[in-house]
Image 1 (cartoon, rainbow, N blue to C red):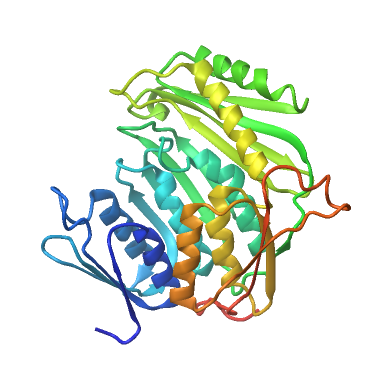
Image 2 (cartoon, rainbow, N blue to C red):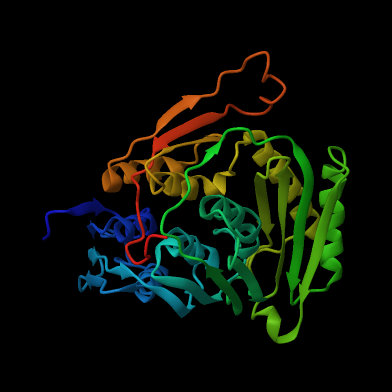
Length: 374
């Protein structure tokens, strides 16, 4: 085994390890993957994610043991280009797309990916959420939104899916450092109420109940209805709500709720609307310049930026982010300085909600080896 191989145990956070291994060029060995389970080894969706990473790289080597309980991954070079992938319906497209977004800026040719599967489910961020909150974060690091696009061609609710999305991203030689510590106040709330293979009236019921809570706080609310019909509506019935609160300085805080999948207990559209509104208010309370879904992506791109100081304000660290910071230390030997933001008389009105943290780090000066220096 190569000297710069990192060894881990267990199936948790496998996606993080594969992504960081690909970017750092270090091999990774993962042992004891569900070794004590009745159904040991890699699950279908994890194998599907590894196949997707294999499609965007050239020369990656994956060795999986017969039982599937240990995995050795030796990363290749990120090439990007045009790819198509059928995502396993056990997880949403968001699970796969989040991984792709981490790799996309460093490919040899701009990434043009068509992914098929479940666009909205209860476990992973939906494609709407990624479009509304992750792409603006990515844009800050790229410095442009030219050729950065996410189109929902077909919607597919869990469990059977049938959705399809198209994602394009430009590649960069270097990422810009980020200085972003003042999110500003909330100026408007936008959202999407979507439904497939149910009555279009469902959307109006969701919107009405969400507005009943949010109207008390802000007048500028607009929630779009998105009802897909026929072949564009996937294979399963479902509906849901994605809400985004935009601040004066361009922060997007998001929340979403999705109905129970076919086969489990029924959902009520009014409850979906109310829960979505409450979750958005919780996210606004946590605050910060990036929402809890995009903390890890922001941390990764801060580390991969030019050799310059990056600084960002976030709300409470999510468990995923805490583990991600540990992995960044393993793969890139970078540690963040984390301090709680002090409340002073000047910024007291800006310091509403939960405690905020300031994350600071110096980028490793990661450069895209495939791109000529412009």
